[in-house]
Length: 564
Image (spheres, rainbow, N blue to C red):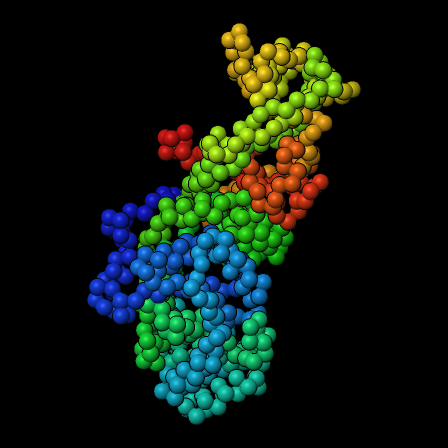
């Protein structure tokens, strides 16, 4: 498997990819009156995922580069699976990503025109009503090595086809009883040209047209004609539609209407990730994830809830680039862009995920002092904040070892460490409960080392973070890992076998700074030395904070590239 995210193949010359080159040629030749108009045509049967973002970025980017128009068109031709929730969600996703369409259209806006064009093809003898069942149609279709056979209903008269099609529209027949098919070539080497279905019967309410229709156009019939109606110049599609292009062209040629140019590009594949809509729907419907916005999902809403910046997603997509050759991007590259962005923008705070109490025995019992902490060392304009310091503190349990490893430089009996922004402390006693578990540490502090520096010049190797017991807030922290443990989940017959059983660990009693008491939903912060965390947009509220782990601090991609 090719895991390179770079695209430098024969379809890319210098800084111009094959799509840009094609558009430039069309502009130079005067084709489409030198206009550029693109569209992104999602089906509203789910939420957008990062694979869609690549398509949006290409469509939007081409239009922007050549001073053209970018539109959104919902392919709402399957009412049984589509909902207004998904329409609204996809619009919101695009706005959050920063891709604003000039216009929003719907394929359902063109149902009347599509029906009239279908009638025109029947008049031309190029479409017929077929009574074969779905299984029979598959049998008659043939295979890649064997030609198909003509349906016994293929030679119906124009008058009979017009009558049956009108009765289909009127609702006389049940679902699946009949379809309208194009009459092309059942022996074609391209299976898409073997009399493809144009309309099927579906007695289902449409989220936009209600019960006006009980026949609905197939994607291939609606797609090209919708492009034509809207004046699209360059219909940019993912690579699986390359074999559909001859059908796209055939319909437009038979109708003799405005003819856009279809160009295909490779889809996005990412390690440890599944972008199949079918699988994502199963994950949601089978309860294997919380929903479309589960932070482990590759959906835009899931990534947003996890705290992934839109700018990082777009930077990743730009790096992957445009190609006609399928390749798989390493998810570590996406992680790299997330860290890179959050390192610059996320405020630093202290969070203790597994609290262990520390009592500084020589610190005054009733004393509380405020220590100054830097909000973000990468941003000189981020300022500072005040953190309360007191006699009783929390530290992370993994910052202490009773019998320390040779290279363990944090707190241990008799060892001295630096408290971040605070003082040097030395562990003097370990308190255990009846079962032998450590429940408390006693330490002393050096009052001359405020700010973390000793006037006598002595140095300590370890610096740990902490929180004042009296001031710390309790929070639920959700630690997320890859949803799929396997690098290539798509290679499994059953995708569930590739799931990571440890993709979510919930920490119910974490402690965080009091400065986060009123943190707004989707606020992303860095818990120092731990990683980046986002205030959950659904479950967090004042007095019951919930943080989702966005990503850890370690950058494996930078290490791969020899930069870390």
